[in-house]
Length: 426
Image 1 (tube, helix red, strand yellow):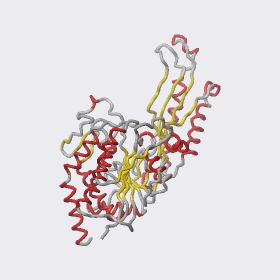
Image 2 (tube, helix red, strand yellow; image 1 turned 90 degrees about the horizontal axis):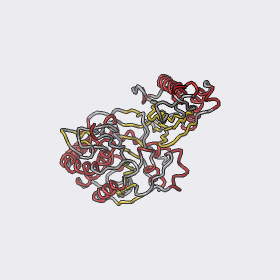
Image 3 (tube, helix red, strand yellow; image 1 turned 135 degrees about the vertical axis):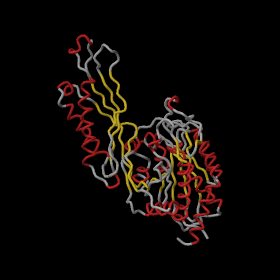
Image 4 (cartoon, one colour; image 1 turned 90 degrees about the vertical axis):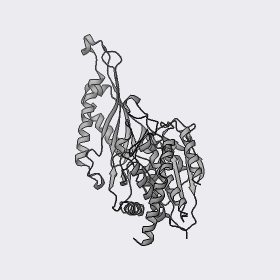
């Protein structure tokens, strides 16, 4: 590292620290606007104002039923389109540098029972080194980190050679319709960075996840003569147990170097079960909804066929289900796995930027969950990685929070990445 590099690193650190209050206030502004998937319109106005204040040319892009119709296998079915703009900001470079697209999603899951929180779920309260609130970690903090990085470069008078596009997208938690809309609108760059909460690890590989609905028929009868009926619940149990066995088998046999440290790299979860409508009646139907994980290297269509064969193979051992077969549907979020080579140029650039800030290279790992990364890789045909502040273990739960020091470290790293990747105009 040259003396000039050392001076620049110190200057970026000083500006990021000096702007700490502004950065945290912006994240608080974002957190205080509820934006559960499907209802992102209000927060996007706040985001658009922040982009404009950062001297970005602001554009709005919305998904349409016609536009996404050919892509249901990628994002699932979507019925909500009104007041769900994706906010895109553009900073044109001086020319001659590589371009980059910085992405984050604004939508969140529900708060849940507020009584389980010790902090206001929409308060943005700062306690010690943590900022609390739904979406603080997943992933409004990530959006704030790249806004703050751009403002840091502005404060230092640094103009980039390559173009920078930033995109705050909707609908990631349920399939990625927002990122798809941005891709279909033609936004492209030489690389994409998604600032998902990775605990400052570089993530060049994301798992996939497929959501399904299984309906198992039964035959109702009075509980006093329950043997005259067929319990849909009892018919489902062998299928459930086989899915558990399948999860164990897949974890024992599937191999990927970036997933070696993950104990359950391909989880199978049954999240919803509905059966029966009366305590003294044999349930005549059961509906189970679940999520099945994939790792990079697995493809959606053959994997669906494999799961269908597995489930119906178990059903074939039950005489009732042979005559009254269950039905299996794929719906909601359909996340294919995706990856880029760990030595891709964008990976090397993120690693170098992180090491310049922290003094050590980042952890490089895959993640077992789905994200918009796969859309930018598979449909946008752009190399894409994830790197950001926050721990996904703190997301989707009570007392969600983000580490303030991590947020500022991510901001510094992104500032260095932009300089190294896009180049600086003299």
